[in-house]
Amino acid sequence: QVQLVESGGALVQPEGSLRLSCAASGINFSRYNMGWYRTAPGKQRDLVATISRDYITKYEDSVKGRFTISRDNDKRTVYLKMNSLKPEDTAVYYCNAVFSVYSYWGQGTQVTVSS
Image 1 (cartoon, helix red, strand yellow):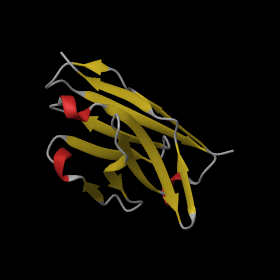
Image 2 (cartoon, helix red, strand yellow):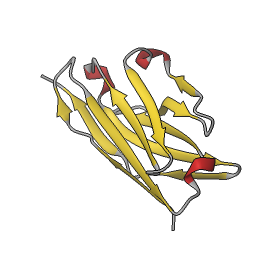
Image 3 (spheres, one colour):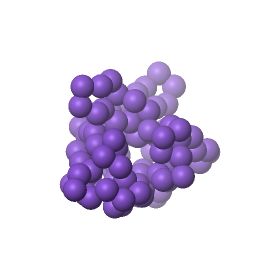
């Protein structure tokens, strides 16, 4: 059974930092391209960042320079380090694993940026 379990979401003040984690099980993690997406209130799910199995990273423009995606294949975990958080970063953040025709999602973790 495939599971992606996100953690690390919290309420944080503007300009604060958080690190999200996504632990995977039931897949050959090193083969998968991993990504973080988010759904803000009243909006569709949008891409935040991806990291390929070759460690190539891509970022949505609004998070470039503030967020860093990384992966640890030994721990089967992908991370999203978020710095200089803004209220508009408030959303449910989801982890995604993709390999060939296979795509899996986690249950999401809430990030709220507010003073």
